[in-house]
Image (cartoon, rainbow, N blue to C red; front, side, top):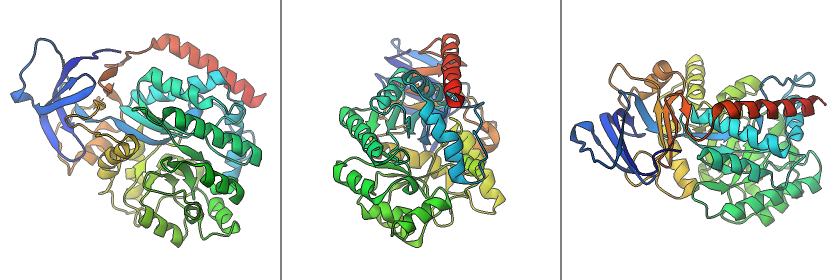
Length: 432
């Protein structure tokens, strides 16, 4: 890693989530943002490096609010059988995939996804992990990849009864162990991962509610497909979110993923508990499960759900699908930028964004705007100008992780060789 001390990013167009500074400079010192000022007023110091960004667009480090890093080595692996329904996709692809993981492939899959994110300006990832053949200690392997890459995140293990109630208890134990180990960490936190209503009985939810510490938020798929809504109704509840709320599991720090197939009572829970909602538009389209009702829900975050690690590309896809449905896109700037800042502050209990005193988490996109950037047109610059989050420079906690096409913390040729070996192992175990 480079530049642990003081340096300046100059000749930048900075959008901090609320305001734009056209000709800006950002001074970074000891991992934090010391000041954000006009380049015209910048006084250079002898003890600091200077990086000219050539007029590129600078954003707060991007957040991927829902990822499955265990899927990063999966491109090229096809389902084992037909997938006419959502549950078939789980049984024919994702469940066999996570069961094929070893300790080594968990680490390299996580690292592959994080590296891909770093190349697209992502400095924080909320991950949802599963590896049913290796439960205890699996989150430590994911954490090792985060520490190697130098990015922030929250980790959890997906509690599911697909292998029985006793196995679900082991999943809960891994969540609790990791959360307790990292409860005071500044950059890596644990959450309580739940798969979905359709793989969790009332008995397991009662056990989760009883053992969950009050301060430990959940990360759960809710209403991703009609089957999840039906499972909640079969269990005696109006809807999937109402069921979780009955067990006291929903609060303002909960990560509620998808929220497509909901009952009216579920919308009341959203209004009363104000959890963090995350939509994954590319994944929803790929699985054919529908989409978030953005006429009723306008405050939410973006995730990739394991489809990619490029949040800006996911934003572009979401923008275009909203346009195709004749719906407004006006709220998307807040969802991707201002909303992410608020979510990170909830999770890590500290200031976020490009503001003095915040951790220097910065995404310099490889995009030079030809027209002035304003709060009113930043979305169009991202969707039609940048088009993806391809980064020129990515900085996390002041450390330059990626610059001008090169990673600074790992030999990429050597890493690629190790990733290919890990992917081959996963492939063989999946079809073996």
